[in-house]
Amino acid sequence: MKVLAPSLNPIFRSDTQGRLLARLFLDTDAEFTITELSTHVGCSAPTVLREVERAEIAGLLHSRKIGPSRLVRADTQHPLHDSMSTLILSTFGPPLILSQTFIGLPKSEAVIIFGSWAARFAGRPGYSPRDIDVLVIGAPETRTLHAAASAAERQIGLEVNAISRPSADWLSGGDPFISELRSNPVLPILVDEDARALRADLEQLLQMGSRQGALEPRKFNDSRSARARRTEPG
Image 1: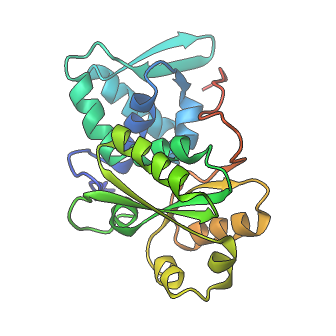
Image 2 (image 1 turned 90 degrees about the vertical axis):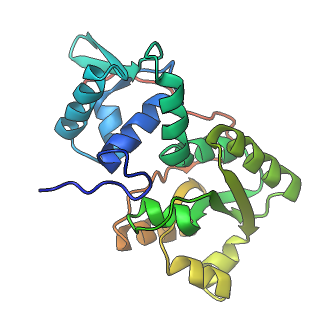
């Protein structure tokens, strides 16, 4: 079966390749097992392993074996590492970067990417996005919302436009803006683990659209920006 080039950036051979490299290039000090990478990109372990081997041959990645596990990381010594990192993180990196940036935002219940970036991520063709639209569900202070967006901008290299709406507006369906937003591709990337109704609604939205998301139940007052690394069979 022919694999279509991703709409976010057709330079990459597939969405799997782009998401895999984004995970590794975002945290160059970390090592990931094949199992962890497979879970992140939403593909089988054999598919991920093939992509890892191709990238390792090209010098972009490095791996080592510890017992049954194969640990993979970005090879920062590659002469094109910095250039590749900029390209990868501006195309496939936003969900990861935004989830890390917005996780500590008080009075927030969920974070959703929408607009042209979400449409390209979902595979809809079109021009490469020049900015990223983010909806925060909850009642964050405007100052902290804009600070989080600015922090993400500096890492991604694209303008981040962040707005907020109360969770009641999202769940009621009475807001025309939200109704329009829900009728188009969206990418939920964070949801507070205590917001059960909102979480169920977002999970259903992902399933209905057959969209691959990075939705994780997390507490927004948790200051940790990344999961603890584990060494497990991969």
